[in-house]
Length: 345
Image (cartoon, rainbow, N blue to C red; front, side):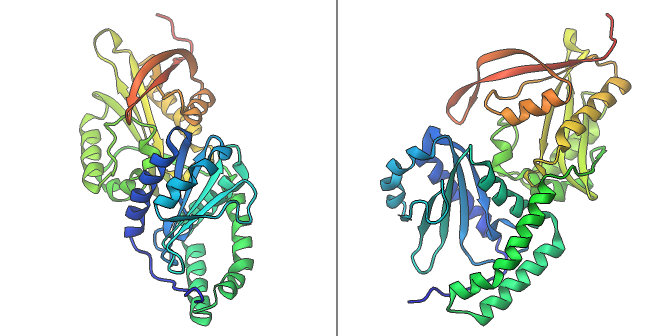
């Protein structure tokens, strides 16, 4: 039977379905799993899509995945091998009424991983492109309701051009501003904070799922504590809050020191925003408070965060062995610090 081409309005339940399925996949992959991303049209809020959840796990060694086929089959997947893309392992569930597709890549395959994430993030942040793509898919689905090949052929040219625009955008350096915390930011901010990929690199105090109530509570706390126990700034891109930076003041003999924390919407990773924002925050803290030292303690496995700190003038001071217990495992953390320039005790 030919596969039916069905394009429907965005459904918020797709995000929940991704979360549930990704947890099962993480269990299968175990220590090989580096990250799991929601990709494809169901990962873009407001975009019409075929109701198929696309999942992209990133692993350390793609060669070890073939031995896990029986476990994927037990989860209801067909194991399709590379299926036309070198270095990929492709799995699908649901037969002709497909519900899930899994695309596994090795972490060294930056081209394919970057392409998928660039397109997703570009569509999330460019409304006109999102609308045009959605309308094209609806038109093609009406024209070819039982011919998936003609449906795909009909959008191939658009998708190729879209990919090039997305890749170009993903390499650009975007402008941003820093704003003081405000409850008015809560609704938009929680959309970006509610992401397992962000929570995975933060302390368990950071909620996941991250609700509107969490965002409102945090903004109210920040407003009340501004300049007293902490210094918080919201990262704003195109007039929308997309991330957060904080400097929490030390106490007692550590009162001239502050701990840095930060996160940025996954939609804006790769634009060199965080190093510039962190540098700007450091300059602001040093100029407006009596703090003379800033430090951060990223998880040792979070290499991206370490690069951000190094690009922002922080120096590695040491390794704290087995200092982090997260999701049932012990990890090292690293101590980075930046000292106020020309400071003399």
